[in-house]
Image (tube, rainbow, N blue to C red):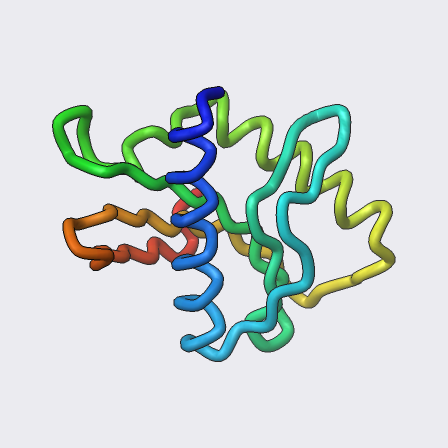
Length: 119
């Protein structure tokens, strides 16, 4: 992955974390990895543990950022989430999978779309 793509992704994750915290969520973990893959953000929303996939783009010429979460990615995220739950000791009342889409706009602005219960 190029330095520029990594920087865009890191920017999107910072924006997403700020958004989630503004919504009253508590971030439990970031960029959690296991052999099955990685989850961008793991947060608590009340008694619900939320696994968040962040998609960031600098333009919409390749579609909206959230359109990049396909069936294969959903399967991987579910496997990684199960691994996190098994190793964390956290026993939530509910689990939810969200997608936070960040479109980076000129002059440091961004457009955020938070899809709760995306899959």
